[in-house]
Image (cartoon, rainbow, N blue to C red):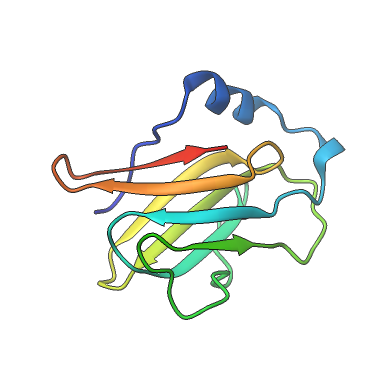
Amino acid sequence: MGKIALAAPASLFMAGLFMTGTAFAGQQDFKLINDTGYTIKEIYVSPAKSDDWEEDVLGRDVLGDGEQTKITFSRDTDSCLWDMKAVYEDGDTAEWTGFNLCEVSVIAVHYDAKTNTTSATYE
């Protein structure tokens, strides 16, 4: 695993990149679904403009394959564009960049062992 390619409808992804107004401030909570085939032990989410991952926001020990969890933010922020980093049990990582949490409420992460690609779909 490692760096990943995003697999989302182009119109949804592009709309997400350009919707950066503050009208949606505080609505960055989302449901994360692990469909990678691997256990995720840490999740980091930070504003796209930040260079610091800060703390693990998983809020539990691990997120097993097929499991889901709600990621909530305790602070009110004006940022809509966010990056996410997953750390798997074996130490491998995957990163997603520039997704719009003001427009997205569900993120499902996937891994295809045949092609060695990781992707995410959004709702």
